[in-house]
Length: 365
Image 1 (cartoon, rainbow, N blue to C red):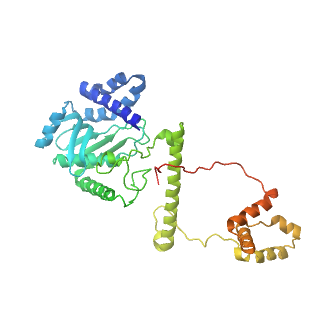
Image 2: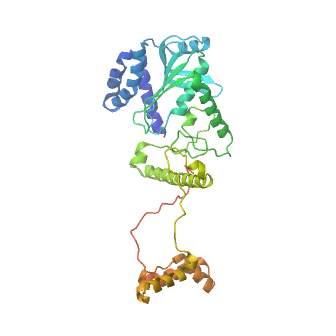
Image 3: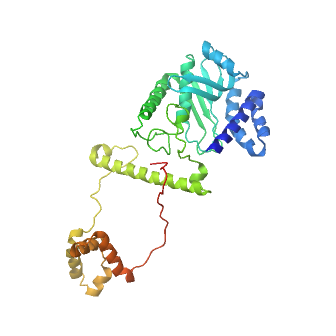
């Protein structure tokens, strides 16, 4: 994680250098030249949407950090763009924006470059930035949020916020996250925007924008390579952790939907996009009447004892229970005895790996 963070910082610094030292019409070309063969494509992909927005609005003045602080203090906005602008709010604490541009006193653009491989959806972080800017500049009515994401397991984030419809919605959402996170014994629920939240309301990526949430250094970081083609042993181990959690999450969701459909038969019929019906359940032989079933089959189809043996199955759980009760031994002892007796007629299927978690703290639970 430290290496990924260092790489992200290095690429952020190059973007800042490009913006400070070159006019907007040269940002893309400069990104290619400064980045070279290795970093050039990443920098170009990051700078293209930023340059397009700035050029389309005719913004050509660079503002240093002090200029931005003066505008915030006086609530006066001049058309300009800036790097590494810092703002504070009661809800989100101190925040630093990678790139900020003002078209006029009504419209602004916030950019956050997503170079780190391990960052998922940026919505909560970007909307927190937007809320802080709404609070700092009362005249701003619209904010375009951009999160160029070269090499990240997510699409580039692009969203336009309107003060009239989004400010209170964002404030309410962040307030709920903070309330959930304030009690370490309250589990909460996975965030709708998060793919791998452990369900405790403390997503480590949200913590980047909501500073009251504690960041855990051992939180599992998700990358494209780890999910789709792990190379190192650690990546493969991390993917097992994610898959194990997803299995439990999916099964819990299915169980919840099943119970809801049973308890709400009328409402489930109107579920948008789904047809829900209740079956009579899977039909199977009554295990308590197995002997009766055997007799019916043998007499109806005139089976000889040898033919009947060929089609009949030994129900291991019932046999274990029978031997346990008959001989007064535990189920474990009965199972061992049956396996020993039947060993000559048993065969093994294809081998398969069994993964068991050993030692250490679970990263996802």
